[in-house]
Structure formats: structure tokens, C-alpha cells
Image (cartoon, rainbow, N blue to C red; front, top):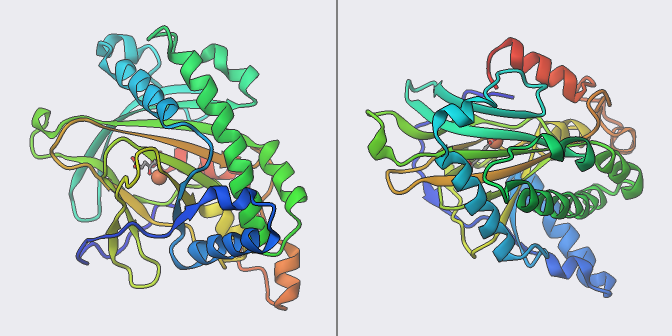
Length: 314
Ligand SMILES: O=C(O)CCC(=O)C(=O)O
Ligand SMILES: [Fe+2]
């Protein structure tokens, strides 16, 4: 969903909710239930939360940032071999300049990689730098496992059957999007970043090399900058299809990037959705429990991608 919202509110620095993920693995069911409640509250109030102690090493995240930085250092002719605006291409490099509602121009380069099931795609990923596939492969496996644990907790926070829904995520799509926001000194008045939007998947796990991510508070509409916090902290974003699944209880978070004028900034977004043609609808149990009507029509990831490519928003 690309949304247009009020851009005049002051930006506040906020760490937002931070979840200690190790508590989810606790044998003590009371501790575990507390964390699940905290996650549910974060999804409802903020549409996002940061996680710490989630089992992916800081050094892997640094290595992956470094391998991607070396990819973006390659001469433009090399990167252009992967250039495409076809959203169904499993490996896709792009350079985008977006106009925001306020007429600010934002620019960035990106690389998008289909990543699950890994065996289908890894052989197509960038072959240069030479260690690229190896590093990204490990990251894809670890983020896939983590996404399943995060989603299980989210589903439990909605009091739904976790195995049923978790299977859909595990059999679904993972796409990794790496964004490179170059240093501002190279551009003429164009802001470095990404215009406001929400993503069309179920959840996104996001790592940022430097601050720049801003989320809009669903409570007061104010923009909040999300600091990197602990080295290696990851941010979990509620996305459009989770909003649909939860029948609107959890709202997808409107976010943008203002990368500032310092050094290059990288972000790695691991996007998780159900299978391309799986129709996502409000969970019937939620609709029945509250004797509500479904607030959304069903749609698949393919419907979203077709829509986005037809409106040139991706
Ligand atoms: O660069 C970031 O921090 C966010 C990236 C993002 O929102 C996206 O790629 O959809
Ligand atoms: Fe996004």
C-alpha cells in the first residue's frame, strides 16, 4: 500500500518497543506468554518492534552488510547486467528516484533477491563479489527461521492456531531487498532515502547499517526515527497482508527513509509472505469471535505485485 499522509509533524527520536527475543524460548510459560503479549501490543500500538537476542550473530549481519556494500561498489555497467523493472524477476537491480507528496525527491539503488525456497534461487544471485552468495545464503536461512519464530508469536498473540498459519509462511515467499543510499555529497538537492509507504507482505525483518528509518505512529500520526540501537538489532514491521489477516487489529506501518548527509547507508529487508497465489483473507476465527464482518477482501501476493507494477510504484 503506498499511502499519502501528513508530513508536517515533528520527528521524535524513539527506540519504540524492544523485545528480548531470548525470553520467547524460555521454558517458563508465564515468561513466554508475557513476551507474546508484549509483541501483540507492539503490533497493535506501533505496527513495529525491534528485537534483540534473536540468535543471528552481529558478525553475520556485519559480513552481509560488507558483502552488499562491495556489490554496490561495482561499476554501474556490472550492476546493470541485473537491471530490470519486472517484479517477477528473481534477481533484480534498480535505481529509483521517487517523488513524495511534498515534492521531495528521494533516490536509492536496490538489489532484490528471491530467497525461499533457497535451492531454487541462490544460483541466480549476484556472483560478484565472489563471497556474495555464500554470505547471503547463510543470512537467508537464518532470517527464514527467525521469521517463522516471530510469526508464530504474532499468531499466538492473536489467539490463532500457530501451526496452521506458520506452515503458510514457511511454504511462502521470502524476498530479500537490499537498499543502498549513497552519500548525499554525490547528489544535487535530491534527498537520500525512500518515500513513505507500507510493504505488501506479511512481515519484514529489517537491518539498517545506520539510522534513517522513520515510522509513522498509528496513535498520533507523528513520524518517529528508529535508531539502530544495539549493534545488530533487527526491526520487525507489520505489513499489509498481516493487517488483512488480523482483520485490521494490527495495522501495517507506514514508513520512510531519510538517510541524512553522512556516509552511505545500507538496509537489508527480508520480506516474508505466503505463496504467490495464496489468497490472504481475514482469519475466520477472529471475525467470528467478535461477530464482525471481514473488513478486507482476499488478495494474493501476485494481486499486489500486479497492482504495483501497473501503477509503477515498485
Ligand atoms: O531502508 C530502510 O530502512 C527501509 C527500506 C524499506 O522500507 C523497503 O525497502 O521497503
Ligand atoms: Fe518498506
